Length: 131
Image (cartoon, rainbow, N blue to C red):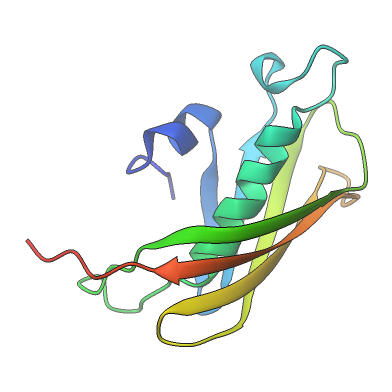
């Protein structure tokens, strides 16, 4: 699955590889333009992947006609490792919430399965977009 409906995520090369009820996994292949001047992935890239995995974990709908959208209202990130190359995978899980707000968390791993960052988010559902 691509993220062509979001030009920013498409420009990162982010791919939604798992999307099911209360779970989303996002992958991104690191490129030189995603690294900081120290040669490691830029922290904002990690934060984005965590935000996306957290958000999509609460937006799944089995009915393609019921597309859900949300905005991030809080996000907390812990950077725990360094990565310079390979594929990153963010695994997001929705763990609570209600009709208007949901809560989620994500762990982000390098290509060897090492934890690079983790985070938690709260998201507010947006009203449905009817054409």
